Length: 227
Image (cartoon, rainbow, N blue to C red; front, side):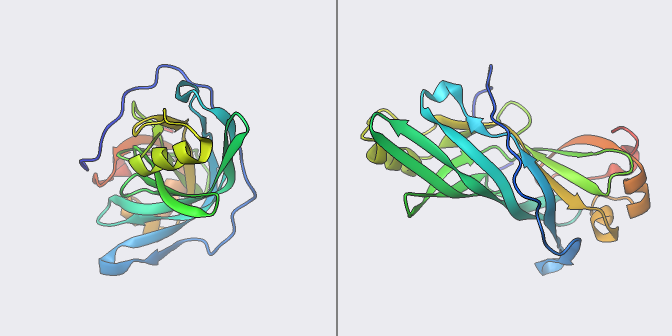
């Protein structure tokens, strides 16, 4: 488990869900460096909204625009999820627009552009993941944002930049900005099935819901049919 800060449990939240345009790309897995496998995200949904406990006025209108997930040695080792849309935050007459959000699955960092300035905006817990699929589906979904640590919280740079843009001095590192979950669909083929220790036909025919940790070894051979 990485040493970055872990965050307190969310007691209650109102999430704003959105689904963007269909993703396009070449289906299936391609070899990664050093013997791993990189899988293109082919289908995705997200339910990220402004965390009510942040006290911020605004709107998160996001969708998943693409991404990749990296497997290595029967483990999910990293990857990126890219978001379209924007987060708009207001304070009085001032408005800040956050665009080009990208989540690094391996580190939990969230980069963004604030009014044309790139910055390390926030962090999200990616240690707790979920693999899910329904029987007959040809996509295996990777869920991010499960467990007790599902807030997206501001970094020091993120809080400083938003304070400056909005004319505030109250936003601090660790303040929750977003809350919600992300679900990234990976097309099932022989390489993906091999990374989760089963075969493609068995994985397609069966359902599964399994909670895993980042860099934990995955073995779905005993979990098929539990979805």
